[in-house]
Image (cartoon, rainbow, N blue to C red; front, side):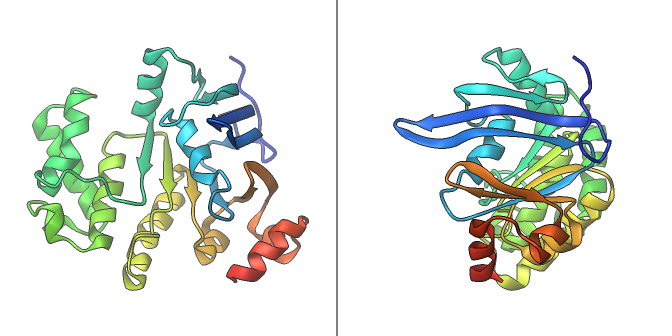
Length: 252
């Protein structure tokens, strides 16, 4: 497949063409067409029920789209299980709820997938995990269980666990919305560092300070469609859509 170019000249790593998704009669995604370049940081925002989370969950096939085309890192998402497995190996995901295994230590949570999926030797997986725990600032928590950690620490473990698979793309689905306010900052700091390292990131979030500081692009979703797509400067200083203006006036 030919590499496509985004507006900023970088090679596209995610391509969506006329993507539709229904839940029964509810039309959750209505013809999403967009592309995301390698190393871009894209913040997706909008009201509840606008299709934001559904959109990023289609990128790694946690949700199946019924019409249109999604190509991730050169592989089209179809019903071919091999394609889905290949994409999930390359796409990390961090959820609103941390989804850690409560019966496993932090270390065992992180090394499980690299050992099982990437067939990484245990010693190598442990070293990767220690390096990642150092990167997210909680090396000393490696032998604790998730219930012994704060919400912010658990979310940082979840980020380390996703990174242990050495993904090319990271998806974040409202990663700070379940956290107490004082814990949000520590998670956002890890995400900022990740963005500065050149990771391709798609982040569903209402953290507008983070978006202003870190995002290359912002997409406003409403009723299953992208109603605006632009730089943070354009979105904040000169939004084109009345829907974007109204939404920002309510949250800023």
